[in-house]
Image (cartoon, rainbow, N blue to C red; front, top):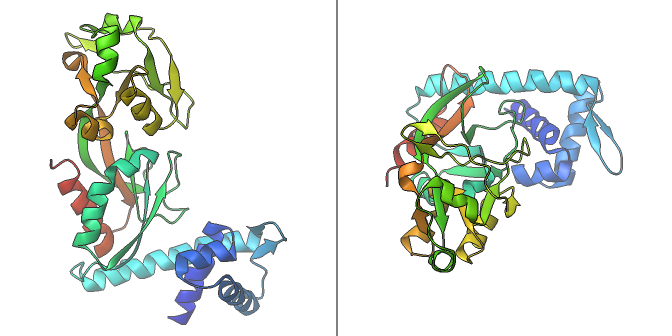
Length: 295
C-alpha cells in the first residue's frame, strides 16, 4: 500500500506540475511530496522529472512511467470496486470537471455533498476540452455530444434556451413579438471559449430554422456578464434556462419569444470506461441524473 501511495503522489505531481500544487491536492507539504518523488527516483534508478527554478516537466522515462502508474491505479480501483461489488459506502476524493457555468449547478452539487458526506469533491471549472483520462478526472459534466470512445456517458437532461431582457429595457425599447424584431434591438452574445465563435440563437418558425444576422452589441466568453448586463437593461440575451432561472423567478428578467425556440441543449456526465464503476462515481452519476433537472 505504501508503494501505491507513492505512485499516487507521482501521478498528482505529474498532473499538477509542481510539488506544492500536488501537496495541496493530497494534504501534504511540498517538501514531503518532493522527498517522496526523490525516493521513488532512487528506487526506479531513473530521473522522472526535469526540474528548474521556475518549472518542472516529465522526462521521457517519466512519461512512460506515468502511463504505467495510471494503468496500475485504474486496475487497482477496478479490482477494489469488483470486490466490494459496488455496495460499499461511497467515500474518498472525487475529481469533477464542470463548465465555467457550472457555478449555476452548485445547488445540485451541494445537495450531493450533503447526501454523501464521506466523498470529498475536487471541482475544476473550465470550458476547455479536458482529457478526462490523462488529467485524472473521475467525472466530467458538459453539454453536447460525446466523441471520445474511451468514455461512458449518461444523459442528465435536455433544455431549451431562453431569450431574456429586463422589464425596464422592454419598457424603453419595446417587446419583440417575432424573431425579426430582434434586428432592432441590442443583442448580447455568448462566445464559445474553445472555438471563438458566437453561440447561435436557436430560433425556429413552424419547425424550420430562422437565420438572422443579429446585432452584436456585446460579446462575453462566460454567461455571468451577460446576465449582469441584461439585468441592468443593456440589451437582450439568449442563455440556457438554468443560468437565468433565479432572475426569471424574481422578475428581474422576462422570457421572450418562447414559441420560436427549439430544444438544443443536452447535459451529460462522462466518466472513464471501466467494467466496474467505483461506488463514489456511481453515486455521483446517479445523483446528478436523478436531481439536476428534477425541479
